[in-house]
Length: 254
Ligand SMILES: [Fe+2]
Picture 1: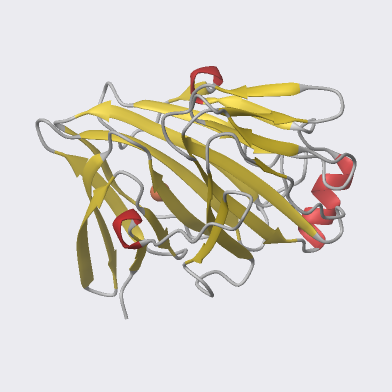
Picture 2: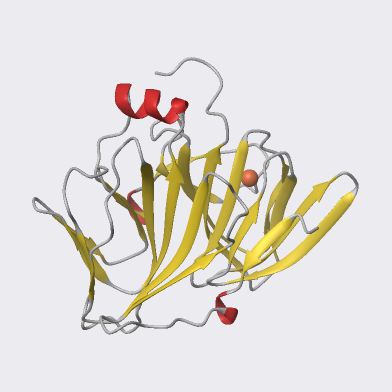
């Protein structure tokens, strides 16, 4: 059994419907609390996703490539670079549009998570304001002890502020590395954005795996697995991490 599950973009066949929309579930069954799909929307086309009550599901949209906008009854968010969008559950309908001028289809990672008691407590009592739309260039930056000096580390969805979910990113040019580390409570997906090329590794119980990551790939690593990555000269990090904290974060809620 492999430690790292990977969905390779090159292996995905998008089957478009009459509205220019293709939806492909990936990494099915790897995390019991979150389903992931790749969504591709052709230029000039619209997608109005299903809405979920707070008690049902949370959902996150990561715009990986292409251009367009998200339109709610009150606002329009321009997708002019990679960005994340989290709706306010079923409060208002929204539509995702791929610009007719977009050189590529809008490529989206769509996550739909289960709501447990921790989520309910957090989402009802203290959470980020929704809808949340944040471009990579708008993220606040953080530093970690186990990364190379100049790695740019981004926060897109702050831990403890969206129930069990969080999201951020890592950007750098090779040679560089993110050292081996472990998250005992976190299920973790990596989403490699255009321009990415690096090696990812995972270790558990004396087993070590190394895999080459290319742009568009999406990996899943279960909690309690040591992992890290490196870039060689001429390679680059531009990846998003997305996490689900299995049983909720320890300690009091803010
Ligand atoms: Fe990690």
